[in-house]
Length: 457
Ligand SMILES: *Cc1c(COP(=O)(O)O)cnc(C)c1O
Image 1 (cartoon, helix red, strand yellow):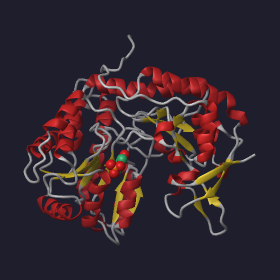
Image 2 (image 1 turned 30 degrees about the vertical axis):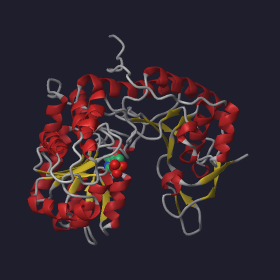
Image 3 (image 1 turned 180 degrees about the vertical axis):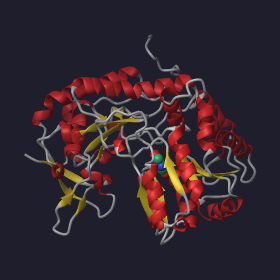
C-alpha cells in the first residue's frame, strides 16, 4: 500500500517560530510550567486542542467573501440550514456561537433541579451546563471503555444495560433527554457503534425519553463505523452519518471540530415547541434566529466544512495521521490509551513515569518535557485537571493520568508529526530523570487553566 498523503496542497502558509533550548527553559519558567500560560508564538507544534484550530479550505475562505451579513433572513443562513438539515434530518436548525451556547440554551429549558441527564460520557462543558441548570449529569461508559490498555473497536459505546437500570430506578419522568457523544471525547476520542446507538434508542423508546447526539466529531465516528462495523463498508460516510442522526431527536454541535471552522455551533431539534422556546432564549443571549451569534460568513464556512469533512480521502488521512502517531509512540515504548482515537493520542503518564506519584503530577512532567525538548504544546488530563481535595487537604486523583496530544485538522503535515515522534524518542530516553511538580498557585475552579507550578528537586 502507498503512503496515505495529505489530501490537499498548501496555498497559504503561516510561519512557525523556532526557539532555542535556552529560550524554552526560560519561557517555561516564566509561564510557571503551565502550557496554558505560554504565548502561542513561542510554540512550534501546538497540540493543545483540535477545537477551532483547523485550517479552512479555499472554498471556505471563498464562502467568507460570499457571506450575506443581513441581520434577518440572510442567504448564508439558508445555505447553512439546508446543509445541517440534509445531514441531520432535523426540522429546526438554530445557529449558536459555539457548542456550549447550544448546551446552555437546551439545558436552561429542559434541565433544572431533580432532573438527570445520562450520557456515554459528558464532555466538560456539557457537564458544566447540565449542573449549572441544577440537574445531575450521569456517565454510562462501558467497562472496556474505562480500561486504557484494552484494544476494542467501539470503546466509546454507551453501557445500555446500566442505562436501562438507571432509568427504572430514577423514573423516566425525571430524565428529559439522554445524550450520546460521538466520538466519545472524554473517553479518549473513541467511537460509538451504530448498533450501540440503535440499542440505546430502542431502550429510550420504551420509556419515551428523547435521544440527543453531541455531534462534535460525527464524521470521524461515521468513518470508524465504516471501517469497523459489519455492513457499513459499502456506505458513504455521509450515509452513515445520516443513519446515526436518524435515531436522534436533537443534536448539539461545536462546529469548531468536524465542521472545520474556527468558531461556530448549532442546536438542531425535531420538536417544534422546544425549538420555539430555544429560539426565544437565543434572541436574548445569542442573536436573531437566522444568525445566532455568528456572522453570515461563518455560516457559509460551516456549510462548506460539513461537506468537506465527509470526504473519504480527508477522513482516511485524518484517522491515519492520528493512528500513525499512536503506533510510533507505542513502538518507542511510550504507553498510550489504546487504540488511537479519532482526534488525539493520550499518553498514559502514570505507567510511563511510575516513579512520580499522582499527587506530584506525572502528566505535567511529560507536558513540560515535551515543550522543553521540542516546543511542542500538549495538555495534562489527570490530577491537575480533575484532582480534588478531601477534608484533610489530600489530593484525590482521578483514575488516569493522561497527556493529550490533539491534532488540529489539516494543519500539520507528516513531517511535523515525524518531528513530534523524534522529540518523543528523547522524551522516552529522559524518562528516568524527570521529576514531579508541585502547585504553587491555584484558582478555586478549573484550576488547570491558570495554576502555577514548580519542579520538585
Ligand atoms: C468541544 C466540545 C463541546 C463544546 O463545544 P465548544 O464549541 O467548545 O463550546 C461539547 N461537546 C464535545 C464532545 C466537545 O468536544
